[in-house]
Length: 326
Ligand code: FRU
Image 1 (tube, rainbow, N blue to C red):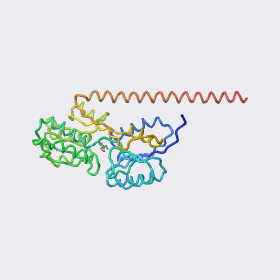
Image 2 (image 1 turned 45 degrees about the vertical axis):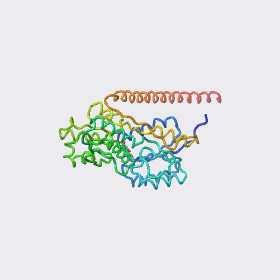
Image 3 (image 1 turned 90 degrees about the vertical axis):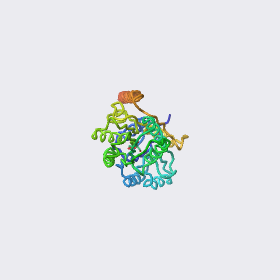
Image 4 (image 1 turned 90 degrees about the horizontal axis):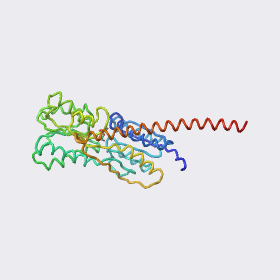
């Protein structure tokens, strides 16, 4: 095969500072290792939509071949994404989306589906009766809107289940904890909390523990990632009851990027699968994650060996050339 053209690919990430996003980046890098010539530009907007819009403009000025973006909030980033798209830069939107269809490809799970699954699971846990508090993600971000919609659709089918309070946790542990303390009286009478991500589910657990109600309140999160303090850990340590797997899409994004750049067929909408993780399958999920990590280490070892052999080969051919010309 011909060596691949050296592409400049940019990624504008809404925040880099949590385990799920670090995982997304790792998933991208694992896939990028198959395209050694790639130039990767990365910017972290630190939860700030205005900063993110500015960073996208900066990236566009760098002469990029393709833009990947996970927009912090939909509205404030729609304009700049449309501009990139209209300038002919292919745009892959990941996980959170914009308020327009002017992008090349979307990769992410169906958040209404995630919310519905969480609602059905909650109703089951409560045997159709009880009080719920919902801890919502950042209000202008599309996963928060979708998860809220799906969850409420599901719960509305159960007349004896009430959502007694909805608080904004903005995807952050401390905001979730502060919000819950503001509705402390309702929390004391809650049977279940649905937090829109595992970080906020952990914040919920910590508040419940402080109030001495951690054994009474059931907790459901979203994300289901491996790693210390992440969803799988929270379930196997019995801090939360369940989480809805929310795949990062990092690997699929890079695969799609190269399909687009190489002029191969690709789908505009790529919906990733979700599933319930609880104590019945958490061990399996952890084994699977460990396996992937081990395989990755093997790949890296093989790459190092190949590089070492290449270096030996190069020095030998140099010696050979010297011998031939001498
Ligand atoms: C990470 C995160 C995840 C959540 C996703 C939604 O920054 O908050 O926990 O599932 O973003 O976009």
